[in-house]
Length: 258
Image 1 (cartoon, helix red, strand yellow):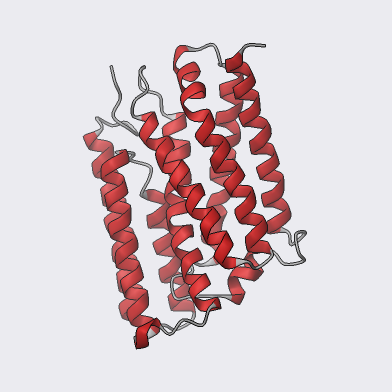
Image 2 (tube, rainbow, N blue to C red):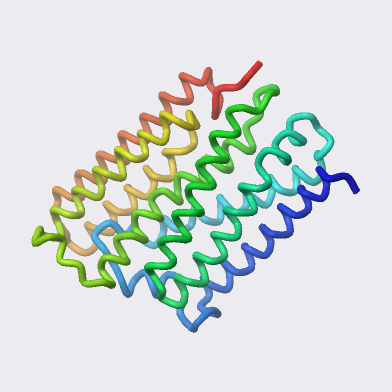
């Protein structure tokens, strides 16, 4: 078995392990509390509505398909480059994923925040490396990791907010509404800043989806209409940013090297 094929199989095997841990975490098998239950315990004004988390099914479906394609097409020039270039970061991201799920399930929110930061940083570095791969216009890996990274950006922000709630942080005396506005603005600017670096048209779409979910959750709980409007505005801005980046990439997920 070649080194390329070994790495491809290692990616798939570690992903399956991470997927199993995620299922265990989602069903409450780990520590008797599901991730949703822990999240509800430390609910914040920027926690998206429950339905938005269905995007995990799409992301994990694309990841599974991507890793299978890497195994099957490991001798293809493009995928061979991808396997050798991305595998170390893939291993870091999946290991951080597992540790994040376990620590969050055990309600060690501070530690889970560290792991989710490692997770999202490794994914962002994968997006940067994808820009350097030669080949024709391939869409699968940029789409898969673009969506994954975008969703993890908002997940990391919510994770930090949940940690602050757990710590009973007083927000320097500012109201919860004011802090929610600040966090949503920071998340928007962070998303745009990362987009300028990774040039991935799929990246801001899950963040826009999350902001739509935040707006729906705020309305459900009868929160400030100003917060609802900001969340919706962010969703629109990030959707437009994705469309603009797609157009700028000449109707591709990322700009490719010819």
